[in-house]
Length: 343
Ligand code: PHE
Image (cartoon, rainbow, N blue to C red):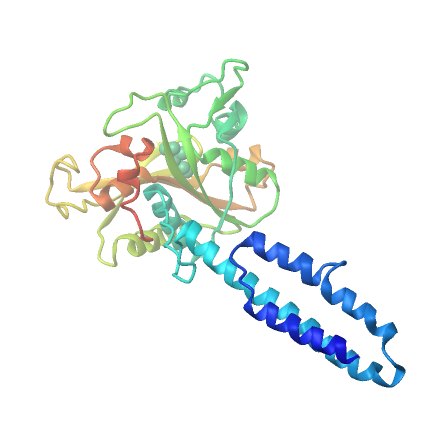
């Protein structure tokens, strides 16, 4: 027993003075001292040769030696890991990371969100519909029978494979889809992209965006329509904005009107933006034609409603002082990244 204890003391000194410089030294150390055929294991095996009365003391000494050999291994491993990391990358992993650049919303989306949010305050919810449409939902159901001259008002893109299909010319098609669902009353706004066969220039494009509004219930009147639109323009352009309604014609509304606001640039004095009139046309509207209600299976004796449709591009151009509508669809990051906050 004494002999083994002495031997252990020597081993300890050997371990203390050992140098473990790299991964190879570390692995050699592990095999020699801690491996299955290593020194610690074989000393443990000596237990059977120790006298019964000494077994407890020997056990304690052995355990202590085992921990000693293991802790030397652990410290050498940690130190080696740290030096290796420093050498290989030079990265200080305790420094905070770089901020990722944030994207920004498209100006048309910002304007649409603002418009939707104003109507939401009056209880309007949002509905969506298809951009590829059939003739019925874009024209016929909206009281424009085939060969009706009003179809010429809108230059339509037809789809070659099927002459019944087209790219919707307005968001009014969503009115029809929503009315067909048969759930009344309806109070919705319908933003979306529309297409018209027009020459692309700084002022007009072959696709653009509209937001459509629809309100159907018993006893809805033209006064409700005007109040809704007054609220909208005051929230959008300020309480003192001057407004006028002009009689107009749409096949799907009767009576129909267009709404103008005072020119935001010259405040009514007349300038090039308002073509010297002092007014800017912002939307078309009217009371839903009874034929349209009937085309969708709604009792036009019981229900009445109003609808309006407004372009999104023009107010966005005015809001930000942008002079060319084509910028909205060119995906130039230098343009797009300038619009960072909600309107
Ligand atoms: N759809 C019409 C347009 O695109 C706008 C409109 C919508 C007019 C609803 C009246 C009612 O010009």
